[in-house]
Length: 247
Image: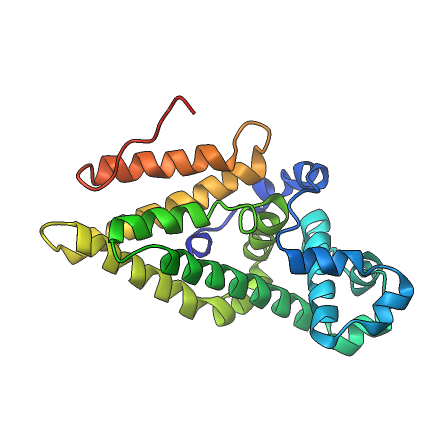
């Protein structure tokens, strides 16, 4: 995952809070929308276990995006979900567990999107790279809430062991897949060149996520995709076209 290859200084992380609080858009899937519509007390009591857990995780994402990891409390999560603290404790025995499951949920969500992006493309490695790039900036993946939470985990040292345990294997797999795709496009088959190109593109995804997080009023996902397409066209002009700058 490109986002796993960089961190953000805590001072920069703090700058995003106002923009996150302004951005209440992008409820990323119909299932999550369903969770949000189940707010009356009677509906809350009848939610299936997994849907209840999803509801609590989405509330956790809201809390972290607004308050950061340290200031997110179980009571905040309960209030955001319209549930009691006892219900939160029933599903997650501690804040540490809740945060770990939230990170796991985000990692699984990204992993599924990665698989779908590759499956939706044919076997042409150039098309696969474009599909993966565009996936990284789809609203369900790239929005203020989710980016804020990713960087909140990486902005505090205490969260890094959790990040490493849950995500390092996936992270390495993404990099390996990228090396294979780039290696298929370079005529000389130079593995080091493919490795460097993979790192650069994933770092570009990271940096553009950070720009979207910190400067949402002046930078958007369309600009991010065009920037990546421009970089790919400069790196491999025989396989990629320059984006339409008039858009």
